[in-house]
Image (cartoon, rainbow, N blue to C red; front, top):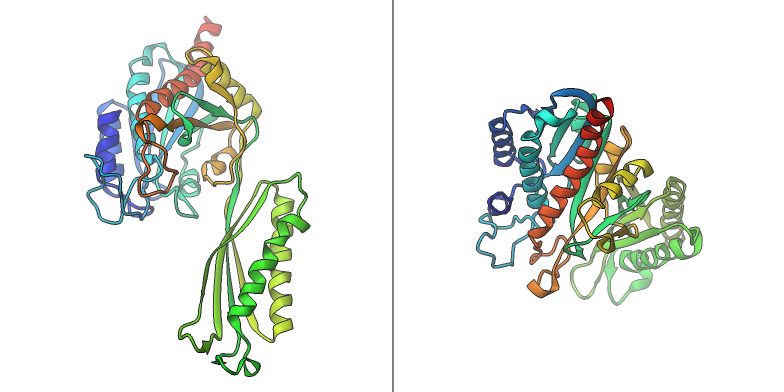
Length: 382
């Protein structure tokens, strides 16, 4: 797993630009003797392991795209491609699932059912690869699906579960303001786009604290504000971009409505024109309780009880959510941080890394829950 992970790490490929990575994945899986489909949904790879006896079909998913980040880790296997980096652990996800496929293939004669290995492209960039792969049959015949994220906020050795909400819906918005520019010394002759944008920014921050049920998590973040030029010129244009994170669809729709009302009200009161674009991204990752219970029960067979627990939801997004809208399943966090080794940087950071021992724990967890479905069926029938 370590060797494979480091190979993928040196040659990262961005979302919707993956060419070499899926070829390597497909070759590895073909060498195991599995049925392999390439180009699923565009760039995905799906392999099927058929057990010796009939039974359920369990799907396991890993993603393999990288990010447009310049790596600063100074690792001996650091990215060889400027401006591209596996800064989220997808290289580890891929290596984990490939070697798990090898291990499960060796147990083919003992399996009652099938395992589908879904290697997904473009998780990092909406609309993401999950939708296209599902439409292209990646989940056909699947009874249950599992996946994990190697998670640096948790220490290596910990496994975090959730019987419901795990990761939030991740949306994006763009606000364009058109005012009237002019001389900085004559503000009364202008419609100041910077001032209007600032007011909008401040008012949007009140939507969560004053318009949203405090029992429902929500985030409104303005991450980008572009306007202006010369020091003595009042800008006629401003552009604000940001993200909204929610779990509840009612809250999501309420925020969309109130955001546009706020932008419209401020601009009309100031004499400016505007455009407001809201782009819905991945829906929230909502695990199925029974599938989560199966994960926790399987983990108890090999992992210390004190290191497996229900974790709080996070406001990050994941397109594993689409799989869960079609079949029962669960997503979980496998701890990958390690302060003693200096592995403390967050996901999407230029110095991000994982404790590679986390891959073995993730593989054991995914393998254990797969066997719980497939070997148990065979024993019961016997």
